[in-house]
Image 1 (cartoon, rainbow, N blue to C red):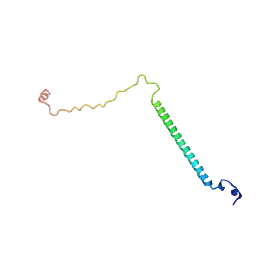
Image 2 (image 1 turned 90 degrees about the vertical axis):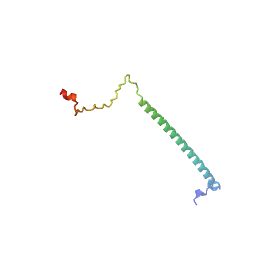
Image 3 (image 1 turned 60 degrees about the vertical axis):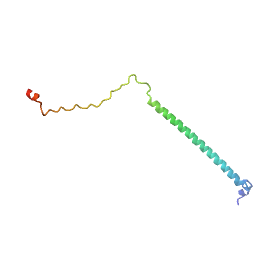
Amino acid sequence: MPEQFNKAGDSAYYNSFSKLTRYEGFLQREFSRALRDLSMLQNERRARLAEADAAAETESRQPDSPAANPKTEKAKRTQFPAPPQIPNPDPSPAESEAA
């Protein structure tokens, strides 16, 4: 065995693996806490960006100055053609006498 591993240290004691397990748990909790904080910050940023986009869209819809006399056109209504004039094939007796 190399000389460096024969030196007395944490591994020379019976509780070295329990310490390692405890440190691992601590690091996992810290990582989970940091991940949760990151997620919260990202959600807040997305919400702020969505609000800013909505405000910009609302401002772009509203004109800067309203028109004094807005021009309006009348709606063009459908014009139906007049019924065709059909000649009377059977003239009345008064019309035949006049001719």
